[in-house]
Amino acid sequence: MLSQNSNLFDQIRYLVKAGMFGEAIITYSKLRYNAMNEPELLSDKFFQREIKESEYSLTKIVRDRIQEIYHLNEQGNTEKAFAHGMQLAEILDIEPTRRYFTEYLYELRNILEQLNNNRHVEQDFYQIQRLVEHHELSKALYRLETLKDEVHPRARIRGEIERLYDELRGITNVTLVSVNSNAPTVPMQVRLTAQYLEKDVAPFLNAISEIQRLLDELSGRNVKDVSIRVITQNSPIGVSLEGVSETFLAVTDLIIPWKRKHAEKMAEYARRVKQYEIEQKRIELQEANLQITKSQQDIEKTSVEISKMEAEAEKIRIENEKGKIELERAKIQLALDVLEKIAPNLPEQDKLSALMKLLPLLETVIASDIEIAK
Image (cartoon, rainbow, N blue to C red; front, side, top):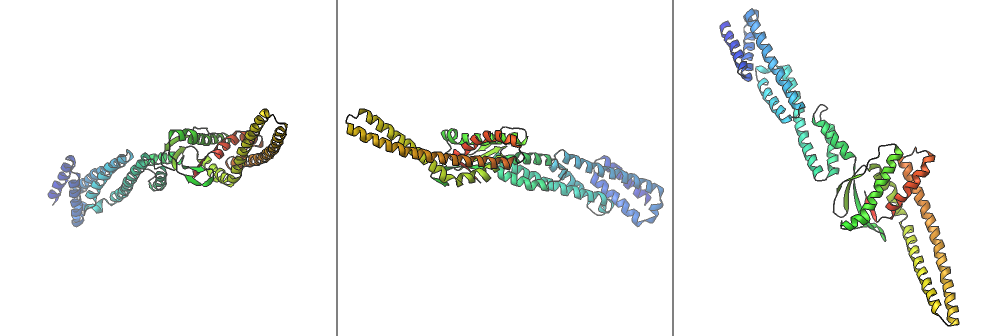
């Protein structure tokens, strides 16, 4: 029996040198099984020396292969690491081998579970990247939020996931709708033409960008240019902006509701301004007629009409001044509300300067026919 076992030890060494690790493990397991059934082998020094040498040699190979799997995973070769892990598990997870390598098999199963999770994470991350390529940034960010919590802390891809998450989190996706001034709650369907971009969209986005720049300054943050990541030509218009999250909140939570609340007053003021212009034109026309009138009676009649028209125009002008002052006060309060929301700790001495910078920008947003739809 000792001679037979000696041949098995030689066979193990040969198999190891030949790279036939699976067969070597199985042969070693047979020897361990023989030792359990033949007590005299336990007292044989040659057998004990050879079995320990074989055990050391084979466990070293197992440890090296597990380390190789770790290394492949750290390099990002998840699929290759998983394949090597499955191959090693198939060798260790058979009887009677399983009982002699339980510790390593347990560790290997944990690695495979992690690797399998990483494989799914990488597949999900690839799909998320495809969403980004197709400008579906909101969906991508939502998927990343879930994926970020699932990925293993040691996974190589975690860094890429967190970088993309931070990048998308800084992007605000907004929908721009054109609003009819006569019906401020009804969005109009518009075409995204070069003229519309220049006349309407660009001034609106410039104002939003400058508001963000001002708020960054007030908050002591690094001022960055607002960049347009994506703009779609669908109606309504979709825009993905990087660096305007706080401005977006201020616009949606304060400015747009303010605009809708004061829409009737602004429309009435605009109507009266137009009416005053018409009255002035009528007065000018009557004054021109007066210059060519020769009849004293017609001159007196025309003069009386001009006086009445001037009195009416003056009433309109006074009403317009009242309406203008009322709207200006409301705009100042809106600007103060925005500053309070974004920079609540702004010193009083800086508030007036910030107010003077913010008011014309708010005026552009308020006067625009464009709104941001939540």
